[in-house]
Amino acid sequence: MKKVFSAVWDYIKRLDKFMLLICLVLSASGIFLLYTLDMNGISPYVTERQWHTQFYASCLGVFAALVISAIDYHFIAKIWWLYTPVLLILVMLLFTPLGVGVDGADDIGWLNLGFIQFQPSELLKIAFIMTFSLHLSKVGSRLNELPNMILLALHGLVPVALIMLQGDDGSALVFLFMFAAMLFSAGLSWKYMLAAGIAVPAAAFFAWNYLMQPHQLKRFQVLFDEEMQQSEILGIYYQQWLGKKALGSGQMTGLGLFGSDNYTYVSEIDTDFIFAYIGMTLGFVGCIAAIILLAALCLKPLSVSTSSKDSLGRYICVGVFAMYLFHSVINIGMVLAVFPVIGIPLPFLSAGGTSVLSMYAAAGLSMSVHSHRKKKTYMFYEEKYD
Image 1 (cartoon, rainbow, N blue to C red):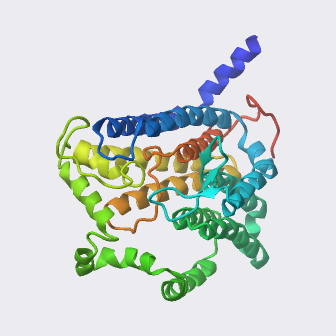
Image 2: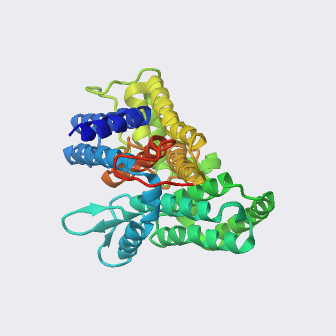
Image 3: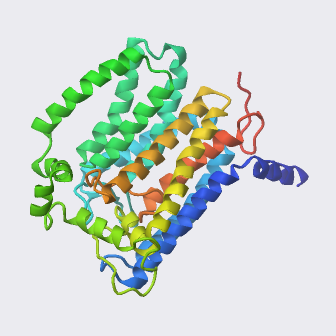
């Protein structure tokens, strides 16, 4: 019994409490925002089910983060063959009748198993961080050799292609950004970066003229064309126009979380446009507070990466940082009409059980790297590394 208490106490001492606190504050804020959305009746599509799901998913997420943080990240990486194939199969099931869409979304991204409905692509992000980190650490100093670069590129292409085929361009871009950030942190040669700098504009030109659908082109064009904004104010620009109106209506301190008669309805205000609701109810002050918390969430894994005892831990933390950063910047950019609407949730704040669970799992990975920076004997796993 004494050994058990000693192990638990050692775990608590090594726990990244600041990272956990950031997640808890953001998560609790998200649940409360969804509760007030339900109470205020701003959207007929927001019910108590949203904040109930968010609460239960957050509780499960906290438990998952704590368990993951207690396990050595080397062990989690080594058993990639156990969870990655399962998640890939779940993603491929989206191409069967089990795959469903939801109102307001263009993609078939939800898997309906009857007793539960969730987004497997969100959980695949965690598996990708682990497998790609392991791949990079195995390659090591041979990263820039052409055969290794081809294999790494294929590793990154698989999830991007799968998610794009299901129609979820937003999640595909998240995978692409994580891939690029982790590859860069591993010491990618300037020759490959120069080649990418030449290839990206050419690929963008080809995609713009031959691959993208008319409605996708409009989402970009409307951001820079004021005349088009006026003509599409009841069309493709309507959601972003309402989002900016809601965001600005809060002015400095907001309209309040309860009881105002001046709330603005915005579709998907509980998910993609939750930041507009923050601005409307809590004003500029609330928006700045949310941005500070999100900045802390992004920077904490990056900080942990600098103290990691090996490259595997460093790459894991960079992957978590990239995921949080891309979600945060693109989501807020959508509300500000700086980026097109591509359906990316705001970490911990947007409604979505699978999203919250994956965000907590990512935090657990960062916390595992933090907890296992120096010692070689851990609570649930023990092994010596060179």
